[in-house]
Length: 216
Image 1 (cartoon, rainbow, N blue to C red):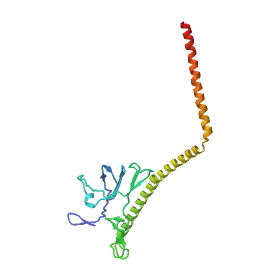
Image 2 (cartoon, one colour; image 1 turned 180 degrees about the vertical axis):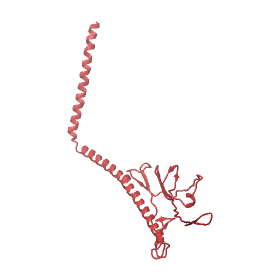
Image 3 (cartoon, helix red, strand yellow; image 1 turned 90 degrees about the vertical axis):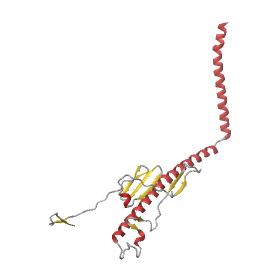
Image 4 (cartoon, rainbow, N blue to C red; image 1 turned 90 degrees about the horizontal axis):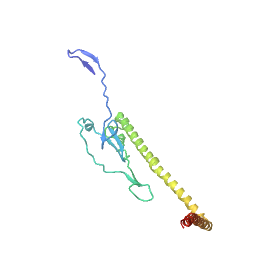
């Protein structure tokens, strides 16, 4: 850029840089994690990614935007019985070439022959941005699937495995029990308990008998 003074004389070349910042987004009152115009919030079982268009990103008056969620992914039941408490949901975005990328940089489908970002005679800068955006999306989805597998499915499998082991051990103890021996031991314990009760009764009766004789 050539800068010119008010008098009309040339000042010289001036470098001008355009620096942007991450959007500040509140979703259901929760501060979202933003990177550029993309934002994500995870709270109370609510996990959503949104991409803000340029007009919404320039909002400075605190206005809110309402949107409706039309899909929630697939539901999985991780307990022996179906219940709301044991149900978990997992949803991922469509990973076709028409969806990988972003509305601002373009989509992978733009890299095909004849597309605006094809590698033969298209915009290579746009193609690079599209590929970078697609890699971020795929990496994010892989992380979500891995976390779901390890923290939700894996934890449930371990818990059910421990419960199964304890049940098998209890069943083995019951099956290996000698019924005759245990019955004899129970009878002996009952006899000893009755004898102890009778002895205590006799011990309490002796002082009462002495007091009765003194009273006469």
